[in-house]
Amino acid sequence: MDPRLEKLIEQSRSIVFFGGAGVSTESGVPDFRSVDGLYNQTYDYPPEVILSHDFFVQHTEEFFRFYRDKLIVRGAKPNPAHLRLAALEKEGKLKAVITQNIDGLHQAAGSRNVLELHGSIHRNFCTRCGKSYTLDQIAQGTGVPRCSCGAVIKPDVVLYGEGLDQMVLSRAVRSLQQADLLIVGGTSLSVYPAAGLLDYYGGRELVLINKTETPADKRATLVIRRPIGEVLGL
Image (cartoon, rainbow, N blue to C red; front, top):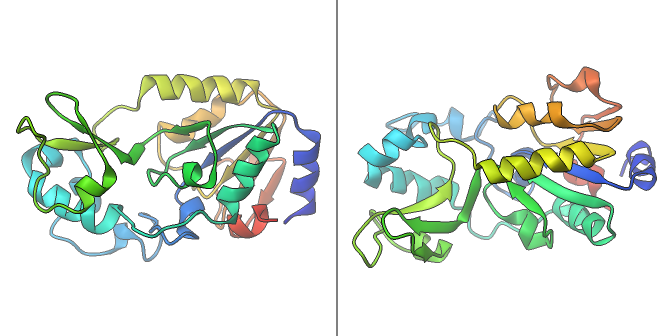
């Protein structure tokens, strides 16, 4: 806990949390861009190529081999950061969680108003008929998952070359405009257009919790360079 942050939380009535991969690394979910993350490992293709729309279409079997191996992390549990945010929402202080993560850990912790900018591994749909499938149905299979109609099933995650969901973006913008405290955690703020959402924040107090420097540090009321679970945990 940080007494400076706790004071800001106590004084606020409308908090929004904006988080990235660093929120989930403490739950054992790998960070694509960390020193030992997926982006620094060796594969037949770079991860940013595999996780693109074109690769999904042209090399679907290879996409799913990587996807099952690296993006579906079984056994990950919410950490103290997830749990604290859910508690703040229950108290009525936290109005929204805006996340770049696709693991569903915020919901598992009890958060309800979670805006998933990059989708979720827990939702999967047929590319032809739209029938939905569970994470287990994708994870337990091999090769290319196919719908009962014969078409390919696609995870509801935003791949490189795909646009963000405009409805989710609109809800995120509205939440930011109405907030009086924005807590940003576990993100380097280097991925756009998601990082650009900070420009819509209309409040005065901005807290940044990240182990490394971010482009928004100079704008912040408070910068904390410690693990987010340690900072937010009770």
